[in-house]
Image 1 (tube, rainbow, N blue to C red):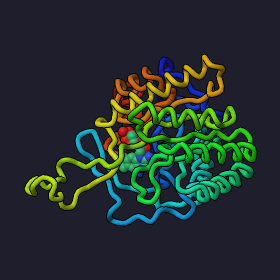
Image 2 (spheres, helix red, strand yellow; image 1 turned 30 degrees about the vertical axis):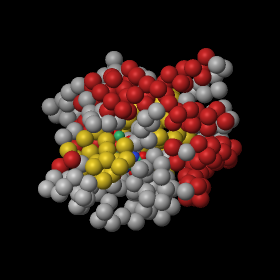
Image 3 (spheres, rainbow, N blue to C red; image 1 turned 180 degrees about the horizontal axis):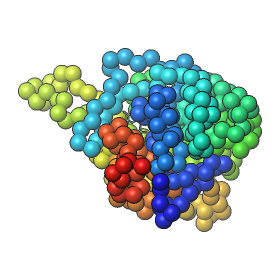
Amino acid sequence: MPSAQGPSAVQLGSLLISPPLINSSCPWASSLAQLTELYECPYTGAVTIRTSTPHGFQEDSSHSHTLFGESSINSYGFSPVSVGQYLIWIEMIHDMSTKRKPWLISIGGPETDLEYCFEHISCLLSRRPDIPIGIELNLSCPNIPSHPPPAYSGLELAAICELVSSWKERQKGITVGIKIPPYTHSGMYDTLFSALLGAAAGTIDYVAATNTLGNSILPSSIDTTLPSGKGEGPVFMGGMAGSALHPLSLGVVRNLRTRLREQEYNGGHLRNIKIIGIGGVSDREGFERMRYVGADVVAVATALGREGVDVFQKVLEGQISKDGK
Ligand SMILES: Cc1cc2nc3c(=O)[nH]c(=O)nc-3n(C[C@H](O)[C@H](O)[C@H](O)COP(=O)(O)O)c2cc1C
């Protein structure tokens, strides 16, 4: 069990996350068995599901992932499992378990799809207000050809804030976070903060940073026998994550924290926004670095895929006990 001296609980909107370590949305948080294992793990403070949509994303052989060293590249879109199916599983897991930890329902796609997912979640919450559920808007998947990450666009961010504000009127107290891609210059933060400041106080409860870095290619898949610039043959392109992303994610979390602090001094409109730090965390040192730069909660994806749920004990305690308990 997590030790008494471990990091303390964090309040994310109406949800209490204890310990402040969770899985990040990914294919290793997708099936009923995986979600049950994550829920039962004493070292996760909440469970985030793989990004869901109204009818499930049509996956084919072009959607895949590869692990290299402690990093990863993936070309997945969203989960093939629909939001409705996930909600059925969540209710089942909640009812079969003695644990009581929050669920973060990651959803993605155009506004009409987000609205559909919200209606489903809202329906479950009116029937089962005892299940602690928050919504995470995935505004950052780099692998949807017709839908670039909305969190790079000021107009899209403003529209999302308006949508969330209407949800908060209809579902009082619901926790809503947004997941952003890696930002690489100050103009991107200006865009995000202008949207956040344009929304009513309390619209967004947390920012999850970061998703993968799009348009990355795994070096070993490049055909080096071809002359440079003549095409590389079949290359595996997608979003990069894991240790290769760690420094950039730390930078994003640090910048978010700095800007949120500035807002606090300037009147506190965004005072309660929390940060989930994600990117390349696989051990206690990585967890501490994320918290040091300003993350309230830390999340893990690639290392979960590589090591399984045991990684959470290693991240929290720096070791895994022999009996795995
Ligand atoms: C194979 C794979 C699939 C992913 N799928 C999703 C997803 O469906 N939704 C999402 O918000 N993030 C997704 N991510 C991004 C992760 O949640 C995380 O933000 C990113 O990988 C950085 O964390 P990491 O370095 O611990 O992997 C995925 C990452 C990987 C590696």
